[in-house]
Amino acid sequence: DWWAEARAAGRKQSTYESYRNTMGRFTAFLGHDDAAKVTPERVLSFKDARLREVMKSGKTVSAQTVNANDLAGLKTVFGWAVINRRMASNPAAGITVKVGKKARLRSKG
Image (tube, rainbow, N blue to C red; front, side, top):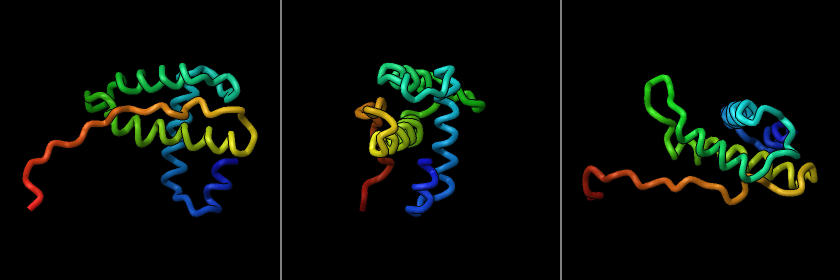
């Protein structure tokens, strides 16, 4: 239902695919798909697990990816559910990953 409304508002297909992948990973992590049972503690556990996850390349998932993709998707979909009275509160609200600035290799000028 979120996607039907988001598509009508002009969201891109790539956003849907990103959020769908995030929700798939999240439900696999939880072992269920009942949004009413999701707690902020479980969202935090998911965030921590994602930060420890090793990709095919051998590197761990970056803090930027977790923050901009995973947490953004959860916050958006759960936020939509709250606005549309399908959930009482957003369990992902306020959860973030501190992302450091990239080192500058040269001056601005």
